Image (cartoon, rainbow over all chains, first blue to last red; front, top):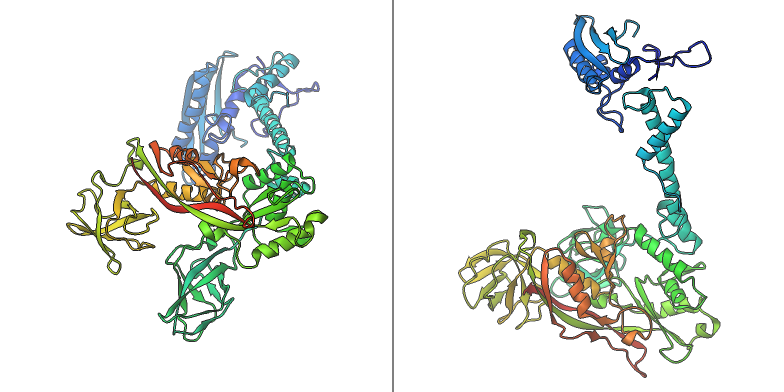
Amino acid sequence: MLSIVIDPVTKDFVDDGKGGWLETNQVSTAVMCQLEGEEDAWPFDPASGSRNHEIMHSEVPEAIMLVDSTRRAMSALLTAGLIDQLSVSILASDELSGQVSILIQYLDLSSNTAVDMAYPSSAQ
Amino acid sequence: MSYPVPSLEKIHRFAISFWKSLNPTSDVLIKFSYHWKRLLAYAAVQADQHAHVLAAQDDVMPDTALGSTLLRWSKAVGIKQRGATGARKAKALRVTGTAATPVANLAQLIDPITGNLFQIVNGPFAIGAGGTVDCDIAAISTGSSTRLLVGASLSFVTPIPFVKSTATIVLPVDQDGFDIEQEPSLSNRMQDAFADPGTGASAADFEKWTLDTSTRDIVNPVTVASCYVYANRQGLGSVDIAAFHSGTGAERNLIGTEPTLLLGYLQQLVPLQLGANGGALRVLTTVIETKAVEITFTTNGDPAVAWDWDDSAPPVVLAYNATTKALQFTGPVPTTMIAGKRFVVRGVGSAQDGAVFTVDTVSASDTILVRETPTVNFAATDVLYAASPITASLRDAIIGYMSGDDIYADTNGPIRASTAGTRAISSKLRVLVYGLGPSNPSGAYGQWNGTLSRADLSAIVNYAAGVRKPTIVTPAADVDSTDYLAPNDTQIGYIGPGAILLRRG
């Protein structure tokens, strides 16, 4: 099944160069929706999304909270059978600058691809 | 509308089906997919549009219109929303000062709590030999906040020499004092106008003219709360009007020149042959016939409605001291009758009205002190019965019914229409029992009920949660009020509340 590709930085659809939007059979769009969506914010599915937005915009983002929030959000995809072998760990945590990033690793079951991704992405 | 409005879930499934038929390979079936989320958002917008259509459907039909649309409908059929009114009451304001000092008519007073303004009306009055005078009072301000309880204190805006600057309310100021008409009431009147649009001289026309504050720019000089139209009572072609103020008992009567003023106003509106002086149109003199009601009932054991104390051996009054409010019994005070417990009194040696009183203190083995001051002092042989938490509200509903108020089926029990009108009730309440109107033997003159009905009394009491086995002790049979015959047929009788006693069955 194909899902539309959303650019993680611009949040735009991606032009496929043939007059349409780029699609993928990977679970990356669902992952992005889970990570970027705000938990308790959407009345039709309050459990969707994560607290990541809130954590990243707090005065001093805490890496451990970001890990917890991300793991909870990604676990929904794990339960739904979309991914496997989920691992979330701290990639960098600089208390002085307030910069934190985490590493998310999972196996995308729809494409049988191992994914390593940094969050937030470096361009964010 | 025959179109079945789909739920949000159905609209979403519909959108998903469309999307899948357009783009079969698209991932749209699970809630984590972007398309699933997007289509749900679209479906929500569509559901909102459906809701708007439903709301518009309600608005375009007069029986369901609310808010600004209700006002438009009402205006279209010539019904005006009644504005807020100020409360008033005769002999309710006790002014203290030097004997014989005049208290001017229209002297203004202010309620220090609400800031509402009042004025003395039907004056001037003069301080009596006892140093007080009870004056008629009417609110200048409007709304339910102008209703005052006994004990409230008002201050003169401009001090009067030799008169105390504050005056006290000695009777509840509870006539009129309504907030702006609530939507359910306006909707009902507007629907009545649809159902009976009037012919220029139908009963509905007379009722509308009498109740409206103005018609065709002719101002109604009398504020009328309820009105009943008698056709052919004086002979073929005649019309008699019985009009009432709001309130309880005889205070509902039009007073002084009001019947004449009302007649003069109506004569400008009615057909020519009725409009002439001495013609066949009359505003009747209403004559109250007070009737006692005694009802017994049991409760279902719910503590919320349980009797306050055990009155299986009801105490009998031996003596009452009006100064100390000490009430002495012929025997000991029942052990369960302690401070804070409520009771009602059957007047045997005195004329009691069935009001609820409270034990302030048990001051001796055979004596209690009463918290409230009775309207009429208790006397030997009067009998006390226990009250329950619902006694006062049930009694108020019965008084309302006997004062022409419709009784609504509120979720908390029966409630007077006039009380409902002072509360922010936005939902439409069902009428439990229609209020008593003036004499209407066998329904000869219209559809209103002029008979004190045991079935109505039973319905009111039975509607209260927790009430079981209501028994109407008094009256023993339904009671009609008097339809006076010529030459006294300028009068019409109506039933008002006498002693209303509710006690354990």
